[in-house]
Length: 572
Image (spheres, rainbow, N blue to C red):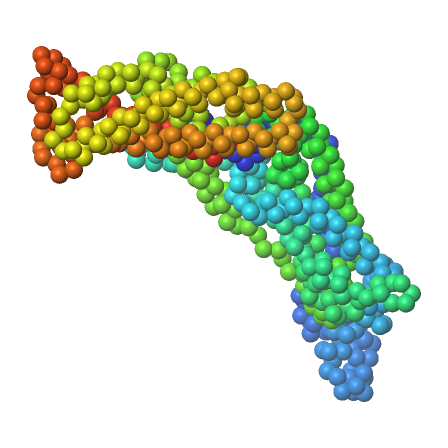
């Protein structure tokens, strides 16, 4: 029975237990303090009414501003704003030397160096964030499997049609009851777990905002003077500095679960994780290395925030003493996306269950038809002998056709031979079509035997497989040879399956005409339908009915088997 978990789909080859164990290892190496970038920056007077602030100033400051207003023709509010911004600039110059040249209105080399270093941090996290953005719902579900693994396991088992087996009747109420159960489980998430999941989602969202900061645009506005230092007019980057302040002044704690999720979703880990043969030790080792690098990068962000008064720089750049750092938007619809993806997982599982039910029913029919307890694969399957076994997209179709001609067709052929020799068709065209179809079935019977021989160790296909097997290592050249070889065999089997299906369809139509009491302009009965085989006519006509029904069943089965072959090919 095929019962693939949702997380095996999300991160191939890493089980839920392995991910939780990896998390425990990562947490033992984590550093909560270094992973926390909730650093407050000075922005005390942000948003305060400038008039109220002016009223609270000393008498001498207000007197000086009034006198300056008289001599410059500028309003007191304008002058007071200049005064306040100037004070901010003086504080920056005093506490963070070599950062700005306020007198001439420039950002200096030190800022350029630090923002260039910060861009490298964004580059480090960007690949993982790109994967996150491709499917936020999937990421939330995966993140949830780390934060509340017991919930994920409950959903995987309780909200699964597989728990009813494959012989359970399909009803709309069954599906609806499972969806209701899923809703109940999701709504029952403990508050502490829900809050941690929400907090973790906010931290991944923060990293998303961070990687999207306009680094290139900001850096491009710096120019190099003769002395070799890079400077930039501060008022030309007011928009960029405001964007940086909006993100960096609203830092979050980056949870270890988020870093593990980023790692396992990253392209780097997917190169290591290959199907069910993933090397867990390598994954763990690489995961620990990724965590170490991530903490180093987060420390650089924290260092930038503590060494660069970004809110003050934005105040200076915007020339606004009432400048206020914007709040980052939340992701209040996270639970909807989380729940919707669980629904998507359920829908996929439901479809898989229906497919497996169909396969189960088909297997039961095949067991009865071929009198076997297992699926009757073709004897020679060299693709099973190479590199631990590789998928062949026509394996079920090939085995079914081989078994039909080996175990069923000999009995059908006895009836077909009699009709071929003794049958007197009313319509000449029916005789011609019967003869052609009968010959085609015999041709397919011989072809399938030939294919099995070619797949044997001494056959053309088998020899080609053995040549690659002797190379031992799985090389790109060897993989290419096998892919080309499989493609050739698949093409031959596909053509054979088409001929087989068409022959079964035609035989079914011809027998429908022979056995029907109603006249049909296309297919008609035999002149000697009541006398063929003489004294055993009644028994023979019963045999014809069985062959007629058999071709119908075979036609339905081969269609189902081809569908299963396609589904396995897509999955591999």
